[in-house]
Image (cartoon, rainbow, N blue to C red; front, side, top):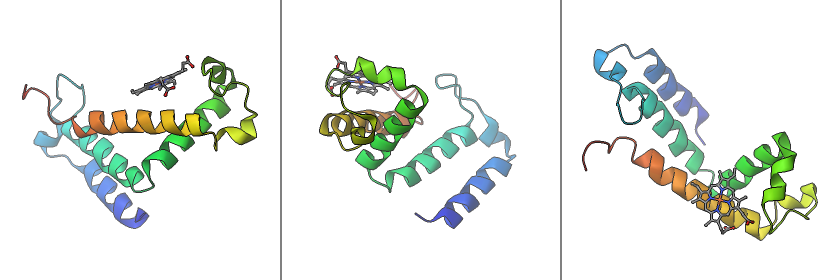
Length: 113
Ligand code: HEM
């Protein structure tokens, strides 16, 4: 992951004052520059691998809200230190990241029907 490049791109987007970049899409509620920031940072995350990103996402979620693991029948009995390696966690986490990838990729497809 090229953090230097990412930071440079994010800095440029954050500082962008061109009116076209401030235009808000009524469907997403995001300004053009916000949408580009989401898409740029997401693209960088995807370099780490979808299942890695998904597993880390759920790891942080369960670390913050340990009670929510109880909703997952497949691994609610699994001790927390073994959760990251559980195949059902990995499968669902990858499904979630795939869905997010489609959504984030479509953020600039609104209104095209
Ligand atoms: C948009 C993204 C998502 C998709 C496409 C999705 C899809 C699915 C699918 C297909 C299942 C059933 C099969 C399986 O266990 O893999 C499932 C189960 C489940 N999902 Fe998701 N999911 C998404 C996001 C989430 C999120 C963000 C959470 C919680 C924060 C969540 C919580 C659950 C739970 C608790 C179950 C298991 C229910 C049970 O064991 O009966 N899902 N999901």
